[in-house]
Image (cartoon, rainbow, N blue to C red; front, side, top):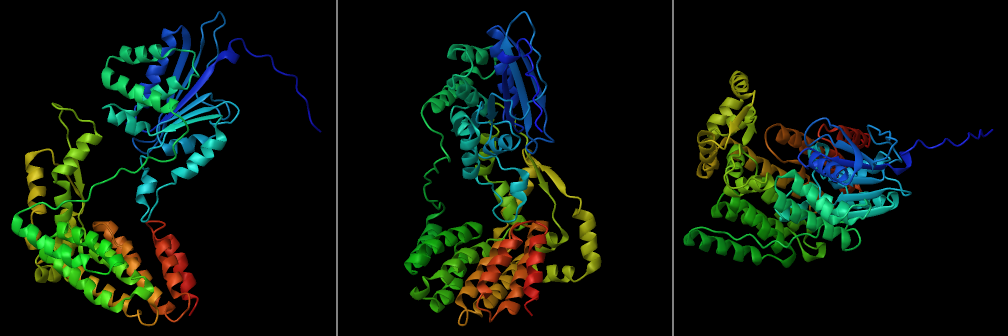
Length: 512
């Protein structure tokens, strides 16, 4: 039975309320955007209420800012404190996944909601912690937005704002003005920015860029990748001559292999030196000799990629080198929008395990310490709590710069000895199946992808790598051995704890 209820008479003023929700994470200027909208509405004689529901933490929890406005009238409107599903006129999302979350929460509906969003990505913690590719697909979010919204305006609002020396709130405000939803002139929007009194000129430029982007046409699914020039080696002439010799040798490889080999060569030379690059090419020669055009040189291409990754491992020297390089400092300053005359403080967190400390010792000494549980426990007590270093100061930066300059010592360390032994063992095991199961050898070479990072991250990856490599002994001889190794590797990349891999390994063991 259907019960028909009488229609409820509207509360005076309710029908004219415009409801705007802004979804942003820390640092994206959602509060500034909200204050501009509030100031704009008040300047035009509107009654306004603005609230916010803060996220869990900066860069992890999204804050929802909510604005309701209505023309001034004798009967004061009744404003809500938070948005409700199906009851939002304008949804502004400061990042592509915020667009998706807004849709999931029901704030975007095809009968009324204008959705304004930025196509750029600020990766969530959950995306960064996945061992493999955990980045959510922007294309899927856009497809959902095209269905969910009555009107959709998408552009790289972050890129537009940064290009004008401002922040994304200004370009989003410009897009809101261009949408022609609010009954206010462009001049009144710009006056709201001027009334703020801070960063007015850059904000107005970013406002204009966002306004123009919203007016120019249909939504763009992705930012067009920028053309990047190939890296150019710099250094003394004698070293550049050695580098050219190595490049010539790499270019002489079969064409499908040469491109990847040149990239790998650049990586290992940047990691160490030209002599190390020669060692890299020496590793590839016997693999290429066993390969052939009939297999599209797939074994050699994968070897060129993953041998370079194995040789350019992450040790304390590499981490310190990367953290103390000038381009990194410039990148941080650019990301933080630091201007001339402003002071930027940078704190680096280091948490080396005992293995990282012994890895820095001479090879023989490090091996002795690793074999002594008491000494390893002592190192854990000394270094296990982690360290925070203010690298904007002279002392901490000098420590990092000194560590990063120990490349000449690196090849004598215990860590280097361990990595080279592991490299040879991995290649021997992977190539041992080459004559009987070419595809299996290729998949085993690809398993090197599981090892990355340093400290605990490296240890977890190494454990998963060993688990998948050992499974080859069970799978060898099966027609689908290569397929199962690929499945195991993808399972290992699904989560940091290895739960998916454990389930897949149980399936493989049931084959015996």
